[in-house]
Image (cartoon, rainbow, N blue to C red; front, side, top):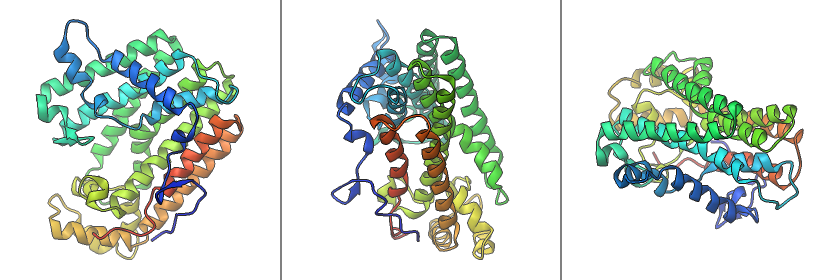
Length: 346
């Protein structure tokens, strides 16, 4: 297993601290994000829809995408100077797309829980979950439109990219011959597009020049690719308790991620190929996890994540080296530190 601790991120109680939380303005930014989010889900005269639309937002979350919008805008500001409210609203538009997509994902996955609370579909049913997800996408579009045609067009294209990424994933479910290229297309739409939109909106609304807007966009895209690769590694090396879901859940659902793809191409590939069917039972799940952990796939995927992080930091350094930029870079490093140095018991 890859040893990844000790990469320079501060720790709290032995766990790597979130770099965003270390900024002096973090609490103020978080408060503004929550205020705008809740305002966007409030429907005058319709407490019922307001409750459903705000359900997952009230359940909490890291709000990483709106924080990235704020930090991207702040890369050209003096350290500690707050960004304009429109920057916060731009970040919230991306977060609303993210949350709306979760409402839809939970319907497709028949999920019962999300963020430690009952999913919207489990509590109110699939029809209301779909409509509430649509409502959040509409609210996101409304905010984006108020920020100008470029932001509105960007958000619309990002929603399309999310759909394209999801469809690309569906096309390769239970496909043991899924390629790295197919995987990258899927996560580029499902995950990286939202981070790229968040950082690009920060640059646009923050008034950056076009070269820096493009660089911030590329940072967000590369970060998003690394984010998903790391998430897929954690699905293989973390415990059920650490994940809050069964380890290897992607394999159970027929979604073969980068560590699995590389394991299939290695010495453990033939046996793993035999196990990966539409009907992976508990014993086979544990064996499959062990094969991935010790078949070279995790190490190869980790090296890919490292490369994405290094490229992201390089392009960001061309924009700024102030506190906001340093925090974005540290957040990229934090992804790598989040992977356990040793895999949990399967």
